[in-house]
Length: 212
Ligand code: 2DT
Ligand code: MG
Image (cartoon, rainbow, N blue to C red; front, side, top):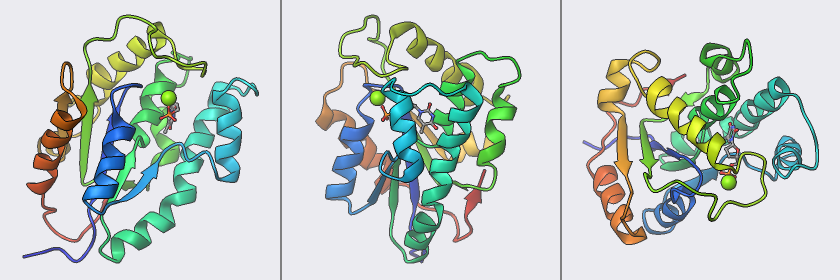
């Protein structure tokens, strides 16, 4: 039995784990429509880009809300595609929003606070989380605001020890809708093979959508 709506699949992870490379392949080879967040082309995305490239200062709460708003800007478009039976692949989404903001360790900005503006967004049918252990120096980082080893380690800690655990995410979601792939030492083709295998074997249980 095939489903009438498209699947919403998310690839999450730290910088330089190959998310964009894999999403591009999935878009090209598996016919998924591709949505990268932040989308820096929208009006809000342009402000986010100014913040990330360190041309504009914003307070931590404001930039957090703008990242969420950037997801809302694209929500109708994504829902319309899924309704029409088109599979969609997301490159970062709500979990990046949570992990990067919570890693700043700002009083009052805990995970529950950070999640509030994203409540009601479509939740991915499947979240694939890429981790990479060889992550000990600044090699390959650019000039953007979050691109330093200390902060990336803090983000990783939030992802692994706070978000993708039963203290935060529900057990059913973690068991049925979540896969962790450790990409350490694997090349692009090897990671892609693992991902395709997971996607090929992933069927949505019914046509009802999941929501945050
Ligand atoms: P890219 O390097 O993938 O362009 O991301 N980020 C992203 C947040 O802080 N909050 C969010 O909600 C999202 C989607 C992760 C640019 C940076 O933006 C961070 C890295
Ligand atoms: Mg980046």
